[in-house]
Image 1: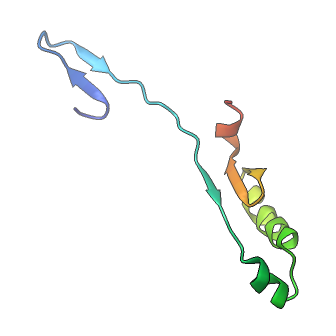
Image 2: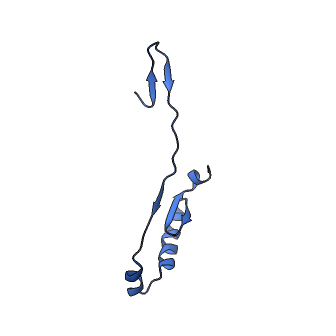
Image 3: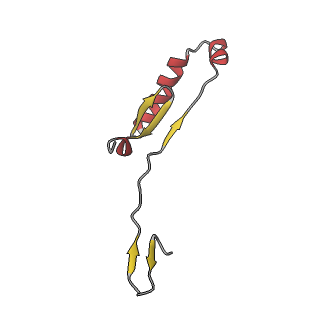
Length: 74
């Protein structure tokens, strides 16, 4: 296989379709540690969101973000 292509026994080139899979990331904060330092979990997630969303990611849950272009395909 070369770059997603295969050649069958008759010499025909078969191109395998690339399947886009959504990627995402999740950040988990320790609630007790955050509280000891004067932060709420929501404040921490909002802060991360400002940074992550500035790169085109979309929040999909508490502490989770996904690439905007992938999410729009759902």
